[in-house]
Image 1 (cartoon, rainbow, N blue to C red):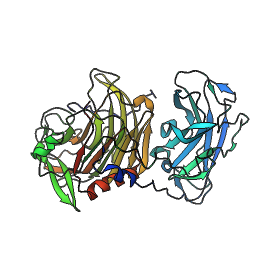
Image 2 (spheres, rainbow, N blue to C red; image 1 turned 90 degrees about the vertical axis):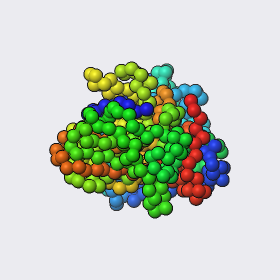
Image 3 (cartoon, one colour; image 1 turned 45 degrees about the horizontal axis):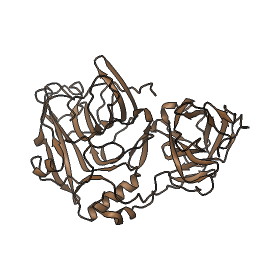
Image 4 (cartoon, rainbow, N blue to C red; image 1 turned 180 degrees about the horizontal axis):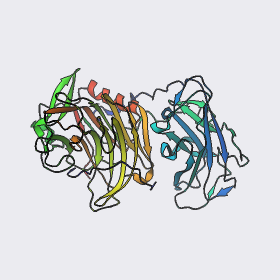
Length: 476
């Protein structure tokens, strides 16, 4: 249970269902729709490690927009193909320097569905929202990338599909591919793996697999089905939030909207700790780890009543308990929207943060985060995926941030939603005001990475079948 949450300044650490719908529903999942590129991309390549073997492979890349329209880099993925040194060899990605900033570039290793003599894997380069867009004619500038074996043994690269020993200066290189919205717009993948192979996992996962789905179809906070379905509506005191605030189960309510049941978390204050009422609902069991997490959440910029300006946090997250300061088996993965700023930010900001660990006193944090400084008022589809290589966050179908393997969870976690106040500095009025955060559904698919499109199809299938709750995720 989330009984303590720290105030903090965000800083990235240097460390670096068996389904109720059955197989039929899984087979009905559509392929991810690829958005046609508004123009073309060209990838240029060079290497600063030309040897047949090397301590690290160093693919340095540039991506240029040759089209007539601006391209958001969050829509772009670049793939470098290579042959693993052995079936068990694991690899680690790093960015040495980049014009766009290494913090805005991610690297994930994936396997090819159709291995060839020169490629059975690829390094997929993606971009966070902080990388911006490529205007027509513009390029990313240098991306000095590298990867190495996790055991630091020398790696062979002379037989790697995308490797070019002679490429000491930048030039167009068709053996590295670029995709926009899942459609390949540059390069040629190894035989049998292109040209428009999707970035997302195969559309039809194998049959079976533990899943949690809840449509939040309840009558109120005291509905006995809430506890029977594994949820706890918080009433105990403690952080996070304003000292003296209480957590009120009665402020978690349910209503019908557009044919769906919707959960509402109400948080209110009159400008003092004693008048502040916060809300949280969480799973009692910590049994969720790798796989896909998804929720449809409505964030609010303005209060339902009273003056605006409070430093509010509206969330969807997973977490386990910190057993000791800087314990390395702690894990937490957050969507956090601050509609009035806070933590040193002056206005609207959305964070996604992957936590390795922290120390509450004196404060020390090991995490990686992505952020966007804009309003997110309204309904949004939030998807988080965790596999053995990376943590990836999506908002409304777009990659919002991918965080590295250093932040992967070592232990299972709970699933949580809450709304709370960081402090009372945002609005000094003693006039009562209240804020709403709404949740349409929550989904977790254990050990499977689904695309946002697949998530939507799965949820629609549950609703079409009249399924309001399903939990086949085993206890740990």
